[in-house]
Length: 192
Image (cartoon, rainbow, N blue to C red; front, top):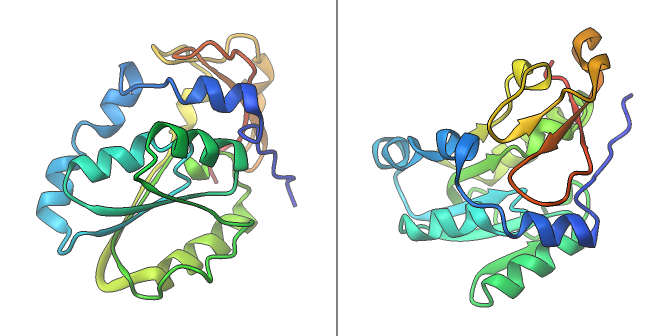
């Protein structure tokens, strides 16, 4: 089993992440979502799973969703609440989603949350998330393609981690986000 490393449980990282906007690579990841949601989501109850500092939660709110943002990082939730005191941001311990309503959400969005979670844990989390969806609800999971860990991008760098080129599915890989000042690497798990 691959160890889970949550680099986001860090005050410095959370403060830097709170300044992240929808520029560069992030713009590309989110630009088509409003149309996808208009076409496929029937209802307004939404869950932002792995909300971090609330950027994607506020994105959903601006699209008209009644949204709950959840994360396992105390530091990230604190930043989300500071930025958006009226938002509904909740800390969930590990994979315990028992405080959330079963079959209560028309949309569950997860933006890059699963990039640094090992495969064994992903399965359990997806099963838990399925229980939270309404019968006609949808889950949108935004993840990084394996190519992100071996190329340079507008928002990400991997040039300092040549070992990424030899990584196999399930192996840890490192990446640096260039869109905020904290240059400590995130440790992700290469997509299985």
